[in-house]
Image 1 (cartoon, rainbow, N blue to C red):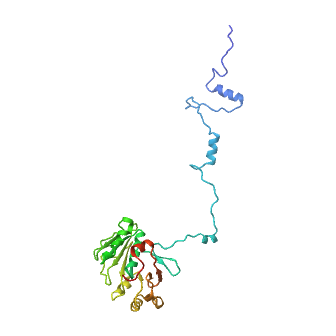
Image 2: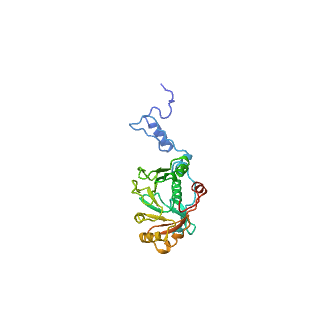
Image 3: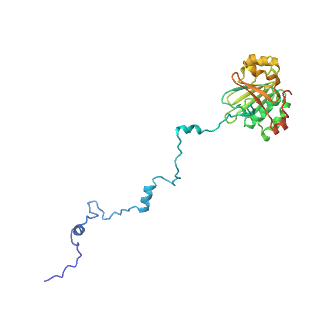
Amino acid sequence: MSYPASTMPSGQGQAPGQGQQGRAAASGRTPSHVASPTDTGMIPIIRQPQPGQQQRRIFSPGFGLRGPRRNRHVVTADELAAISMPIGDDGVIIGTDPESHPAVLGLSRPTAFDVVLVGGLWLAQVLALRAAATGARVGVETGRPQAWQQLAQAAGGGQQCVTVYPVGRVPAQGPSVSSPVVLIRDCGIRPPRGRVTSLPWQAVMTVLPFVGEHAPRWLAQADLVGIQRISPQETEVVRDTLGIPGDSLQHLPTLHDGVALWCTRKHRKFVMTEPTDAETGLLGVARRMD
């Protein structure tokens, strides 16, 4: 009895894997997948990166957009001296020196600073206005409050930046780097010891109308002294107290009303204080005596 010819496709009825291996062997190729004891029967799918993604991975290793491409700024060691930034003093512009350069007085300092001004009320009030314009809180200890009330009301554009106190009644001001204080003591020829002294970020300016018998003590303790026009006898006291050479002091008896000698034991400079239109309207023209 004859049987019909087998119509089973090639590979059926063989051991698992024999058909694929046989076809792979017949075609001369290495099989892409070989069964293993842990095989689940699912063929893994491996996704190849797209050409565009490969380019981004190669040419864009960082994150975000690429910045502009410019040449680096490089200078030689000899050219470094040409790179500079003009930086001047920080403080109150009190006028101009003989070379017509701005004269700046740094009142807001991280250390205690005592100033003595031998001069008139006009220059003291100009300095108070300009100190308030720099952002400092100005306190005035005075025995003549009527002479300072108009300035206190006009300064600050309605804000309380200049405060007038009776003599010996100045409270603690609480100075800080963000809120410096300038205390002006206008207490006559013999000022009493102040309850509030100079501190970091709090400068104290003592105003003396002339050089009297108590002036040497104040001059000797001051970090900076400003002197307007004085008599020849007063000039001798200043010379003996501060040790300033005679060639600088010989001009003091003939100084203009708006000129003062600002000095320490090592440095001296004549400064002309010219009022602005607003200062002239409020305080009048420059004058030595009141």
